[in-house]
Length: 317
Image (cartoon, rainbow, N blue to C red; front, side, top):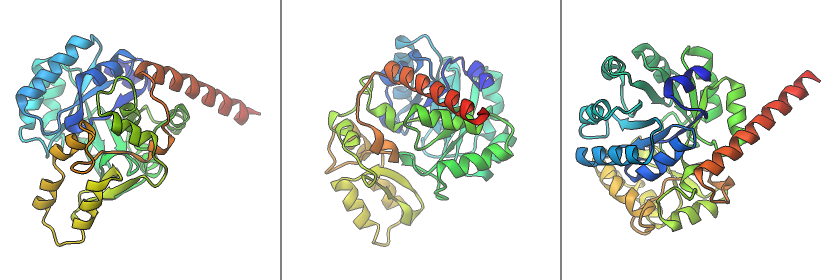
């Protein structure tokens, strides 16, 4: 764990998920200022907007943060990588694509490289490509997930058994107890997204936060399974329409048009679930309060320390 923390320049083993086009400087900076690794997702944002958000984040924190680049989704991933180099971003998280062509150049510029994976195969390929760490994400997570739909616990154990670089675990992490469990499993840290949505530092729609806090274990669903693009979202009117559309014989292009980032923004930032969707992980069912990020991390670290200490004493006894 300490090796990854040192490499990233952070003091708490908590990383922020990318969040696509709803990612914003205020939340990213809050995570970094609280000791974790704030992450700015580029989604499908125009290049000039990516640079603008990076600069704004730098104005709000002097701490390290990362840029999450979905390599096969953004129209100009190389342009995003160039911004990371020019702006001195500490780390790049490569998702939705092969990081191999970019690792050497990023390392040459002093940038730590992480890769988000949803299977053991892709974790091993990422390790072979030379990334510094992998983020294993189970299907409990909000947003787009791997089509294998492996659960976080199963996937984490498989990857920890077979790779020799730091492993960060994502999907269903919503308490300090879960952080402790992943550390006990051998992970170097966790990545979280949904839990950060319901913090005072997140500048998203209040109705989005309210929907998460009102959620129970059945409040999220998977869309896109029929076209091989698995995404976990909160239930809503537009989501219901999407599920109905999936019963039709759709092309991938048509599906992407119905679920592009405009609809994500409409739901998450504008609170309009009649014409947009809100990503939400299964951990939504545990979220009931809205602390600041700093308060949340303090609570989690205290809880994790208590859990690990208690587990050690129980084991010894």
